[in-house]
Image (cartoon, rainbow, N blue to C red; front, top):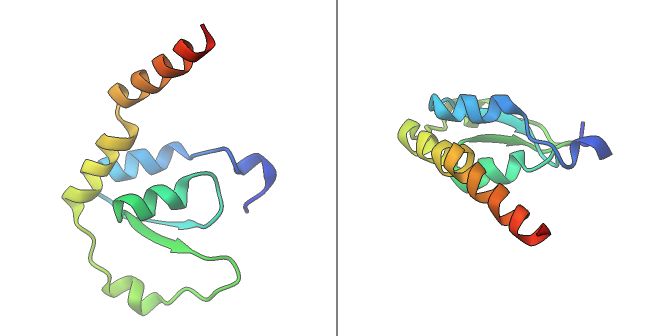
Length: 92
């Protein structure tokens, strides 16, 4: 559920699944999960209050290599180090 505590969270499993090229199904409005799925075309977003069309979900073909590239782009150690260095530079 998109509760206050979930607004600023991102599940670890998302990066792990994307690194294996596996598309995910996620809820909208929980942390940045749906934005990552949209940006990297790495799964399907379930909009709260709307029906999930299983047929279109099963017919949707995802590019495994594109999903893996998205994982490397967003979740890589190098990106994490870059982000932390930027934050630390702002603080200091």
